[in-house]
Structure formats: structure tokens, C-alpha cells
Image (tube, rainbow, N blue to C red; front, side, top):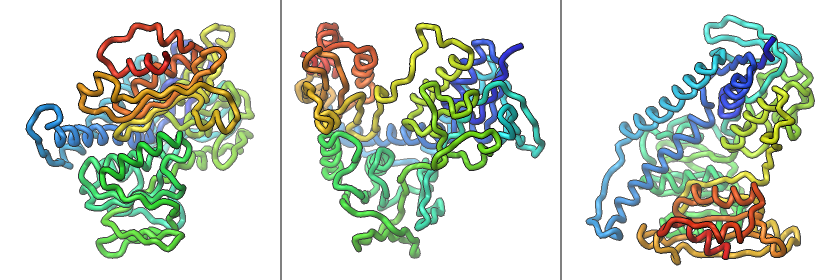
Length: 454
């Protein structure tokens, strides 16, 4: 008899776990109420990156004289942009459906919840209820934008992240509340699309969890583009007054703009899972997991945003694969490894892009750890000059005794792609010598990594 595996939530973790488990011989049912591929992924992540790409194309055309061309001044077609986003997300959702179907995964459109340690109740879209027995269960229901008590988004002028792909009109002046990864991406996006932007920064610099040198580089870019930074200010109310939105801060400062956007994190979708029925413990809505992504109930797993680990689609996908392997008893295979969350690469799709992986310079110094730090500006690379974009740098962190690459940060064009080279080194404990003796293509931006390794 095949192992009966029920997945609640069809985001990156759920799809990866379902397809991988099915390939390994499990009998899989996946319950999803919204979109296969994940609401946070296909309604937040992918649309935002598509809009950023549009803004990037617009900015490139506006500065095309640097490439020996006459300057072009295109305008935004919001209808066409909306159709483009729908086409991209629709294509990805269809691809996920086809993948699951090809592996004989039973897709159930509805809402799932636990009614016992080995029993899942699915309320279908037509209102009927179906009970499914399971040997193993994965909870991967994702998250939703956090909305504080002092704000009531209306989807028109006071927006959450999911109201902004795209908004009904491009704001003339947008106030962004939240200076973390999501917030700065929105600042970049709407500045590129022609909006005046004010960013409320509750700390003394943007991206408080990132390398201060990286944050400074981004701040300088924002200032050069006319972004108004309100540092050391924490929002305490957002109200709509006629055709204006008024944001009041705890230090007395007030910002008036045409629109405001909340980017202050997310909350896990666990409130309707009925976790207590199966004895699953949770903290602040998150389900704590061990190295195998197991909850306190060993045959019930959690992954993605619900697990409280890094809220990255790449992490969720890898969790899904590892869960399938663990559930199907593949622990003795050499290919099965724990997920080392500290070695996960991440990127911020601003302009310039920002990416990092592993140990940062600030973390090493805070821990009193001896590291070797090498930094190479992109302005030294022929490819950066060819691209007419010499902004940013590569920073490589290594062990001074062994040369093992411990981490790195990149600010500049294609940083999200280039960081994968450093991530590969970090994951496999490669040394700076390994990197320096690798033959890369010339001219490329990746050559700066060789220079940093040397």
C-alpha cells in the first residue's frame, strides 16, 4: 500500500513536496483554495518582479544616450501592464497544474484543515466536505500581508502589497511604510515608473538586517533619484482625507501623498488549520520545525512561510523536496542533506540589485570572528563599462586560515544571478583558490568574483 500523503497549501513548498513524493511512489492529495503555485508567490513575488522589470526597461530607455542612442521617453500603459502580469502568472499557474497532473497528484480545490492526527477535512469550493486519511501531512499554507490596527487598506489609495500589481493608476506621490526588503523594492519599482516616493524608515538606515555598506549604497541611489527618506520615524496612523492620504509618525512628522503602501511584513495563514485537533504546537501562528521540517507531531510537517524560516520561495521549494525524501525513508541516501538556512542566497530586486549569502562582514565583526574581506568595484570590469552601468561592488568573505569562502555580498547589475556562484562556494566549502583558478568568460561581470578571490 502506498504512503498516503496530504498537502494543505499549493505554494512552492506544497507543489515541490507533492510532485517529488509522487515520483517516489506516494499517493498524494494536494488541497489549494486559491492559485496553484501559491498566492504569496504568484500574487506578490512574481508580479512585483515583473513590474520591476518593466520599470527597469523604462529607466534604460530614458538613459539610452549613454549607449550611443537618442533618448527615448516611453509612457506606462497600465492596461497593457496588467495584462502582462496576468499572462505571466497564468502561465506559471498552468505549468504547476500540468506538473502535478503529470505525476497523478489528486488536486482538490478548496480549504483544508486538521480534524485529527491522521485526518484532513477539505471543504470544496462548492461547499461539500471531504475527509481524507493520511499517513503523513504537510502544512504549507503560506502567509498574507500584515495589517496593523492603525490602518485600514481600501485597495484604492491605501494599499497592501497585493493591491499594487498594478494599482488602478500610477501614484503621483506614494508613501511607502516599511524599509525592509519588500519596502525598498516598492520604492525602486514606483520611482522607476515615474512616481514621487517617500519612504518611512523606522531605523537609521534602510535594510536594517543587511550589511550597512550595502544599505548605504542603496540609500545613495534612492537619494540620487529623488526619494524622500524619513529616518527614525515609525508610522502610527494612515488615514484617507479626501483625495489625499495622511501618514502620521510617532515623532510628530506628517506626510501627505496621493497613495500609501504598507510593506511591514506578513502573518502566517495558520488560524484556520485547526492545529489543536492534531496536537500541533505553534508560536505566534508559526509551526516550529526540526531539521527535517517536522512539527512536534513527527508525521506532520510544515514548510514555507508557515515554518517561520526564511520567507523565500527557493527555501520553500527545497523544504518540499526534503520533506518528500524524509517521509519516503530516503534518509540513507547520500543526496539527502539537512537544509542549512544560513547558506541560503537571497536577493533584493532594486536598482542596483542587491544579493548576499552566508556570513556578512558585520556579522563576523559582531561575533569577533576573524575573516578576510575583499572588495572589488564593478567599475573595474570591462563588461560594466560596456553596459554603461559601473555601479556597485562585489564583497567576498573568507576564512583567512583555510581560504574557505564563508559568504559574500553583491551590489550591482545582475547581482541576483552572480550571487549563485558564491552560494555554490559556501554550500560546498570551496576556497578562494578554487574560485580564482576557475576560467570565466571575458568580458563578464562575473570576472569581478575572480578578482575578489585573488
